[in-house]
Image (cartoon, rainbow, N blue to C red; front, side, top):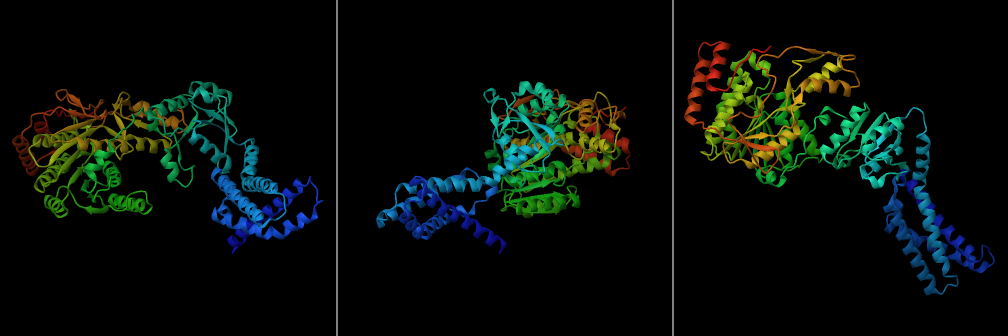
Length: 619
């Protein structure tokens, strides 16, 4: 009822504007006087008919549905068109009927109605603009600089000015385009280019920056981010344009600067058409689906519309959470709804269960991410690492061959290169199994090798975050330890791309960029949290853990690398490994496991079947 009354009042206001405008037009036509009473009385007689014509046209052009507080160019255009045709119809009516009123009043009335209606429609926004200008002078606002004076930056500034939830005083823009310097956007000056950042921050006493350049390359964003990081200015980033559209509030799409932004990541370019050709309409199985890599594989695979996605894991909690997440995203329309998703609890150690699964559902593609990955834990129980990583993978490989799976992709690690720990040695043996099959199978078997992924359950990032939140100290194993890093979505995207290159037996190696010193990582994370390393939050060195080494390698010296069509994916030179050799090694490992063994026996057995494995007890 309230909505109906409000709509009715707005329509009445528009019709009053029309009536008054025609009277004023006639008054102006007679030299601002009411000297010709006959014309005025005649016009008053026809005003209801004039109002009816305008009402019909307003309804036709939906002028009455304008939301005043967000009225824009489209609304202004619709008002102008509807008033023009209304005035034209009224003029033609008067002309046909031979009504003796000056024709020029239709032109004058048209202009008056348009101006009056535009003013009423935009009054709310004009009023908000003046209020925003006044609010910008409040003393408790944070001096904020916006980097990027394009569409995203302009949209952001309008949102900040219109939304009282923001506590920002916009002091200006910075933009790479020299031509824009000195110009204004929404009344806010463009203070210079990115070369002027240090000077602008100092002059304007900037203590908060929002980078609004969602369309520029990651490398360019990283260069700008590092400048503000070095100036110790709080920095936030406006996410991609697609995220801004999907989010109900633009404030949600502004995120804090993260450690990932400071690692100099490269731009990921994918051939989505080839990935879609591989995955679309296929039945895809992901093992270890509840893990960091497995879950991201599932999220990205769904976007390529497989016929069915089977998510397999032995951890029911993580699988349950992933299933709920995907179901929610599908219900929200953020993932395709025509993909059948099957979460299933099974262990890769159970050969019979694995064979039943692949046979019953006629799986086309397997992404094998299931593995025990935590290095220190596997040093304690090498038998579990061998049973799961080696024999579990063997079960998956044999089942894939038996049931004629089209493609089998095994997720490997840089720790498989010259391994110094049990986990790395078991993963290297899986690579050997993949290479031993080569192209001698109807199923294409490949492995994808990459380094640490940021934010995974085994990454130092979440560990450091918890230690910083607790007030420190941050525990680093060694001051010189370095690692390669990549974000989970980036790694998984490249895994999917590498899968399209597979012919059988390849080990694909992902370009991980420059290695990162873990001590530098810890110091940057402390600063990003608003603290000073060693003063506010201390850093302590604990010594290398069992099986851990200072430097990870991405390939063995005898492998060599050759390029693919993607600059971030390489192929390691295949090594001569026979199936007989692998089967003999498996039999030997099985015998040691079945025998009365201890940890030392298992480590020696691994050293025998993986000749590059050099065991170290740490420091």
